[in-house]
Image (cartoon, rainbow, N blue to C red; front, top):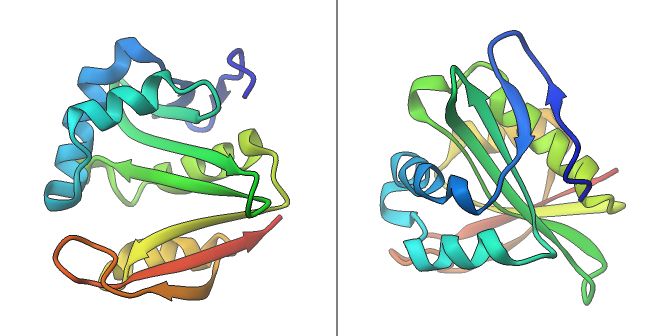
Length: 155
């Protein structure tokens, strides 16, 4: 990823690269977005220092309101969105779609995949609107036994 990339996507928020100093805010955001599925601080720390990961944040009024991380899986020959979230107070403003589009560009892969809870209708609708289609299911993927839907977009 080109660390110099900064994209103004709206008058209300911007998409910027994120780094280690953003870790506390990303951790709080992750907990607000995912509660029971939130990554622990150590996992987020590891993600923030891994050089091959694409990490972007959405910022409004000096606060991180959205976050996405992704990587290239060379074995599968595609990009993977590891996590994407928008603070519940800011959903419905195009932030998730903007983060997703910027991550897809930064990954530079011909196809990108992600996993979403079967019950997360709002996220599934966003992914379908932005060109993702269901390709497979990870049975009992989440810690509570819910299936994860694998969705893919050909770029």
